[in-house]
Picture 1 (cartoon, rainbow, N blue to C red):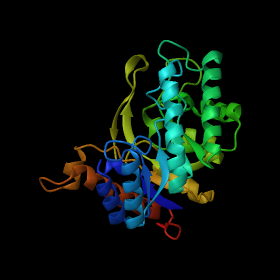
Picture 2 (spheres, rainbow, N blue to C red):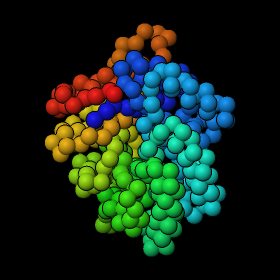
Picture 3 (cartoon, rainbow, N blue to C red):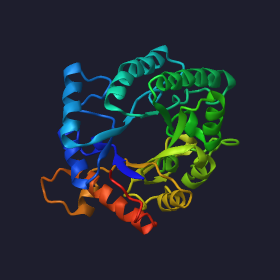
Length: 307
């Protein structure tokens, strides 16, 4: 087991991201944003600089947090679909150069005023996700699907159906503990209740290779609107984080835990930060330290590794 995180939550500047990783004593980072860009959109010169910074720091990117088929992209939009293919075409050679073997991807957002799992939409979604996975496989990369505001995130049943229909060994699951807390459970008839992180997790557990650690407290809004949420430190919300990481240890999980704090400026008061402190940076580092403590409380003392 190893620890990592979305370092762009510590700061946009890549040097700051490396600094936060070193301060935690970790050797890995999950890359989403780099200096206002990402691995796919950096110029060749910028990419070479990032590669050199990683080498000098002795830190590796273990996962690329892509925008492929994410919650901002519609399966009805040719432009959105094309953008996902283009991102893969640009980033996969760079992932090979940096020896990154995992890409976070999704399965498109629900289409407004359409049944999100109609046979027609499902055919489109499954066809494109299958091709995304095949492209990744050509580079030895796993397409890790995250349960989020996408088709697979509608419920554990939708995730399982996605796995069944795509049917490719390079499609695995990235489970986010926090996303179910503010996502509706699309099983049965509306109105839908909020999901249970524990229910989602236990039904897809055998397919999970990587875990995003996020937590929140959410209140549902009427008429199926997106739930409002307050993000919290891991274990302080309704994401069943403690139960999930305890069960993962029991079942022999040896993958990564990637922190994704999503904490805002409101956390400054609880951290008692001095005026002028870098709130994003301090939130990220404190989140990592508290998560390490939570892991130990859940029995992970001897298994925690940063190398």
